[in-house]
Length: 107
Length: 245
Ligand code: SF4
Ligand code: SF4
Ligand code: FES
Image (cartoon, rainbow over all chains, first blue to last red):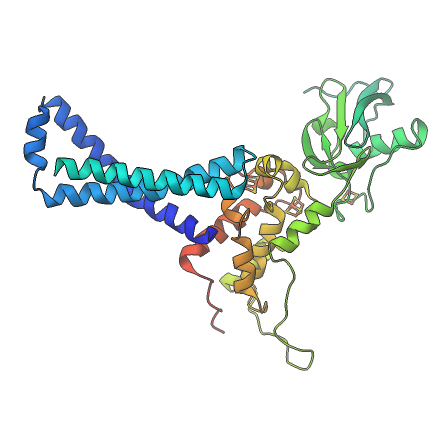
């Protein structure tokens, strides 16, 4: 399983790297141009491009972050491995649900 | 760091006495022009503390049994000249880190040897004595990769230098993974896939932080850190194919 977690973490990192840069650029653009919430929503509504962009984002985060947290907890705490695994699984699911909820509400 | 004092002055040497519980005991040892840390320990044992326990065999950097922690860093004591490590006439010698202490400077190497089994160390031949020997080109890329890590003599210096081992004793550590690297690149090894999978199991190579302290301290300049990176890359590329003859 470790091998697959390792692969999943590296692949999700590769996907996340450009997405994070685009996301940050987007925020800077939206903020500096003084777009209001309503203006932003009017642009994102119905945009499949932005929807798929942020779905990919949410998915990669939901894969990447829990694996990293799992490694950290394993190294830095004496918690039982099964508890760590369970906690990270729940954490990943939470990220996924919250992320999907956020994306669906703006598209 | 300063030069040791003149011939007739003394080194102030703190030596670990006891097992896991114990204390540093100070000895004054005559400073000489030419002496290694092992010479100093031997002098203490011969003339001041006959029951001092320590390990050595070859005294010339071949066997790797004299490894200890000298002024905080793991080293082969027989290959460490006092001038290289003495700090203002002071020297502190302790057993290797990350291993249980038996007595004084002797630690128990069993946990270290066990890591080799966990990471898939035993070589498993694919031919019998009746088959002709495998024809391996010394300059083929796979052979070169295996050769790069082959000279390891199990001294545990890298294991003692590794901080990840320090906070997670289940991590198999640099030496065992370096060994696994030589095996997965050895086309004569019948269980290359199995060795690779063991190297990638829980507490295997993905636990390494690639900070290279193992490589920095290996007394024979092997590069376990690079071997581990090689194993990690293999997870994407798969096992290297046998070289074309
Ligand atoms: S590179 Fe890896 S094995 Fe080497 S000392 Fe660092 S964590 Fe340990
Ligand atoms: S890799 Fe170097 S430091 Fe580590 S056990 Fe082998 S010889 Fe010793
Ligand atoms: S005694 Fe053999 S390497 Fe030091």
